[in-house]
Length: 530
Ligand code: FAD
Ligand code: SIN
Image (cartoon, rainbow, N blue to C red):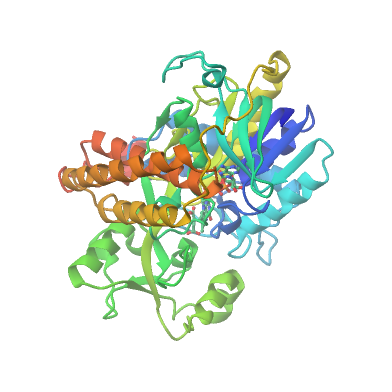
């Protein structure tokens, strides 16, 4: 079956929905999403969205914090653009109905997070992402030009390759004509032809055993773009959030927001001693790479499975008011935060790398845009500053929209595209092989490509990935397609890219820390000012 649309949007998180809402005033929009419409990393965002809406904070301070956190690898032009344009984009989602908490004086209640020199994080209690998603979906449902298809899984982007032409990575004339999409309910594979396509398919946390990311975060968009020969960048920079709740039964891991440390919670070892001041003068509120590495080090040296987050000195009323979800979750596993400390461990949280895009969210493939976590803009450099990703998604979706509406009328639908070829795939899915290979993949990545790496560990990981890759490709060639098999394949691609990029970086910088290379000096804010 074939469908045609002006704008195909892959993903219904903050990036996909804001783009869809904007372009819908100009043409027909098809949003596809592989689970329920609200399921996304966006939905689980706790801390909030960083932005400078008024003084005493300044754009310059936010820019400086972002650059410092990025360990010298941010694109300063992009940082300036995102921070300064961000305020307008935040006002837009407020106009669309997003609520952010306010103080009794009627000002926005700005939270503090690691690496920020000011309180600047707008939030809705501890469920900011859920609130943003709610407001955006409400707008989406009332727009006549937007159709949302849930449980529609994008398998591959369509390019000249599907017209039988040979294409090579890096050639400037690759074009995107839409995507092949699996309707998970009917098992039918649909050809969606579009003038322009936006990848807004989110992150890839599921490549690790312990992650804060929901099951949908399997890096599909990045892997599809890679197969279509797009340029990807910065894939070695994986952010581990320092404080996921230690509860081995939870998959994904439940996040204890950094804003809790912003309210004064302190990290301690199991014997109740503070340790972060030995690693950084900002102690528990140092940037995430520093805190996660310090926790990792303490756990290894002491042989402990977790460290503790002490919130007992924070007023329980204040805690419950700002962090009701975290409070209830802790209580549900027997932790009363006013009496007991919370056991926490680092967990894979965010991928700084992804599909390389320019300042208009254009990928290296014509008619293909990328925004949100699947894109790499240059904002984060070697390490993302907390709560900068929702902001980046808003700014880049808007920029994609500005470019897209000037372009789409000049693009014709490519009607020569053949339907998906399922020839030679007759066997039913071997679910046990898929789940076992996924487990092995996550084990390999968590053991050898985690917070601390080395050349030797990376080589081991690559050797094992080759075996998992070979087995999975054989399975892909002969079995009837399922989203689980596609996700496994995509995760293997992501793992391969993380290892490949990590092997190429012969230094320790930002989130990439290798025992084989001494860390380079991170620029202090004083140096950056000068
Ligand atoms: P997502 O919101 O992840 O949306 C991706 C969409 O693509 C989903 O709808 C998914 O189903 C769909 N999709 C994926 N693959 C396919 C496919 N093959 N076919 C069809 N659909 C597909 N950032 C902040 O700035 N502040 C925070 O406070 C914050 N807290 C966080 C807390 C948690 C627990 C997590 C996990 C992340 C947090 N982040 C935070 C990061 C931030 O939430 C994400 O980076 C951001 O929401 C990504 O938005 P997105 O639109 O790019 O992707
Ligand atoms: C958090 O609430 O700690 C998450 C913030 C983020 O990932 O930006």
